[in-house]
Image (cartoon, rainbow, N blue to C red; front, top):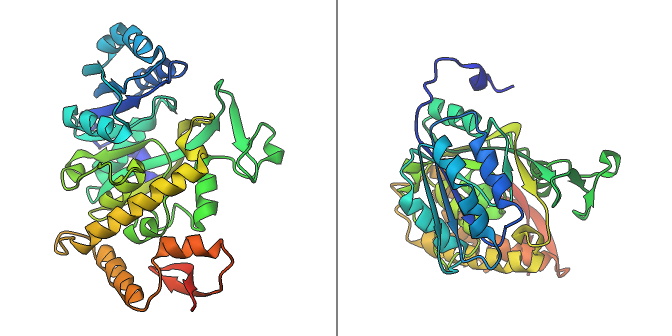
Length: 329
């Protein structure tokens, strides 16, 4: 157990803004809101914005208003025309008044102690900008499940290869989230990863531009920006339930690849103009290496990853502290 969890002298009174963008989640939105209501941490404002759902999601949200008004410091429920996740998240951030922001998808579920554990860590570690826990997996009906090698749902633990979402991510990234590598700019520059259900310091968000349509993979873009200015912490405890269904963006492989490609391209433009006096040394190291390899005619990391799959020849090197395959002419 993390030692900070046992500290009794940490004052926990900061306001946390839980922001929920929703779209066509009529089946899940009420359970999501109820999991916020059931949080052991008390000082919460709940902000829910429906992005023009075509089903009864907005009606389901409105049904939760009386119970939410009674539970939370303040609430904001709103519906609008469909604009996409990035613009919806930005509007929610503009409304949020909390010292911390908890990002929450409208089809998932928070464990009761999630916010309390995450804010306890951040309040005692001022250099960290984000804290996150592990996610267990659940099916469309809320039944616990696991993944096999190809990320198909299985219910028999003996047949599972991945037991939690973080378990899959760690094996895919080839490093443990409990290591110092977690949350560094270099590791994000190489690969997109982050469990769901993270708490972010609001003051860190003021330093960055969190969302833009030019970087459509909004969660990945946010991680790239935050990792330039502060540390991140993975807490090895189940604090979240990630619901698996056909409309998960994560399950749409080709769409995810294209969104990641666009996001990386935009990030490289930002990196060229970055204020080097404001960011962590890790960022400058990545920038320096990136320019060196570009001059040598070697593709950037994401291009290398793409070409490996086409059977081209490479040799192993270390870049940003991570082993990858380098382009060989």
